[in-house]
Length: 60
Image (tube, rainbow, N blue to C red; front, side, top):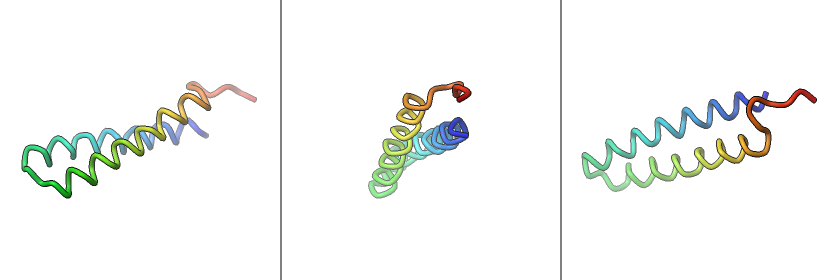
């Protein structure tokens, strides 16, 4: 079940990265801060879950 968290967190991080680039193009500071923060936090969660749980998950 933890692999679903990796996928969800990864998709959110990817969308936040796209939003970060778009807000940089439009020079929107607040949008950049929120998108970049979301990218860092959810990307970190995805990597941490991937490291601790492994992918593919081991059958216990």
